Amino acid sequence: MAPLKSLEQEYSFIDSNFQKFCACRGIFTVEDFLLCDLHSLTVFAEQEPNSETLKQGITQVLSVIDGQHQPWLNGMDLLADTIQNKHILSTGCEGIDMLLGGGLHEGQLTELVGPSSSGKTQVCLQAASNVAKNHMGSVMYLDTCNSFSAQRVACFVGLASNLTLDQAKHKILQNVMNNILCRSVFDIFTMFDVLNQLEFNLRSQKVGNHVRLLIIDSISSLITPILGGNGSQGHALMVSAGYLLKKLAHEYNIAVLLTNHTVGGEGGIPKPALGETWKTIPHVRLLLSRDRGNNICSISIIKHSSMASGKAARFTIYGL
Image (cartoon, rainbow, N blue to C red; front, side):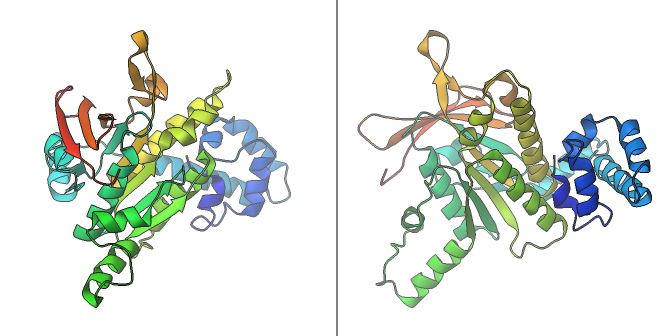
């Protein structure tokens, strides 16, 4: 859920005074607001000198919550939305595209699961470069491990980033790089700020070039640190992150690509990290591995909304 501060520009009564009033009662986000006793909050507001504006703020937050409930849609409406608005974006990896029926689907969360050095980041970089070069739109790349490489992007589009490029090739490389917006994100709270700002910009049509692909490499690096202990706050933040990513994907026709690491499962068999609750979040889960000593990658479907699990493919990533 959005921090109350992110609503300030659009809703006049959710100003700094209203935010301070809420903060004194442990309310910092819309989710906190949902969990509070609304009657008690209103009583507290009535005791303040600016009670009317505070009650207007409460009303505005309730209108935001009410507006997040989507209307019922019948099957034909959903099919028409898929055909007209949810396109498929090629990743540039032939094996992955064949496995997924063309590539990443807008409106869906696709998760790449694999151990360290299995090629997850390379797939993300190749998908980013391919979408930035061949599709009308931009890529948002949230880098959580300092793994983004502009040089690798240049190699993936077939243009080494050096000064010997002729003017035409330099222009192509410049356009690709301008279409990839990279942001270093090292904690889940910064990620929420970035995603809420993206939603605000999309809703206000303030994004110049339409965002077609959102990459988070890796989502598990942000979520794992908050899941320790017996408290429920980390779990709630994880669920909220999943909700927000699904909302962005569906409402703004964005393909979302996430990476996740593996942990030991029963019998020592690796399984995706983040637990049982998170596995319901992605629409598609792919297991990635790499042959020892070469650049041949294997990928198989763990979960897919319209394909059987177990289907697999192999491909090569050069320069791993």
